[in-house]
Image (cartoon, rainbow, N blue to C red; front, side, top):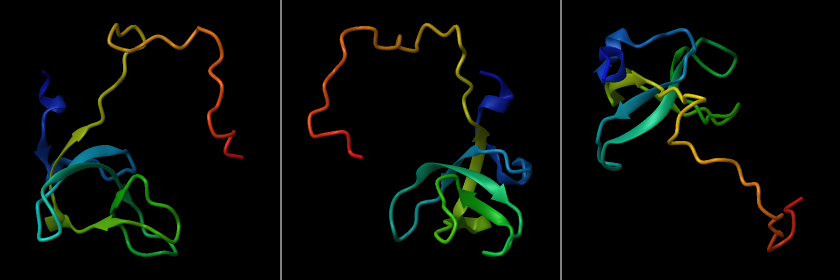
Length: 101
């Protein structure tokens, strides 16, 4: 495992918008967890800081520096990886409860 594939101090985390894995410290609200986050620059919704990658405008989840313990790059999927399942090539699977549209 390369050094860059291990947990690293937040002081070394990229602050260029790159999505990374972060360890959110345990708190009164729950145990420690891993999330995907990025450094967001200042915009009309607030200041710059660490944001959850699944945030949406108007519902931004921000992490304060003390909430995050460490980070690592997102794993890279290799196109030739034998661990990835092949795409479904069988008969079409009918939808059970409609299309949802």
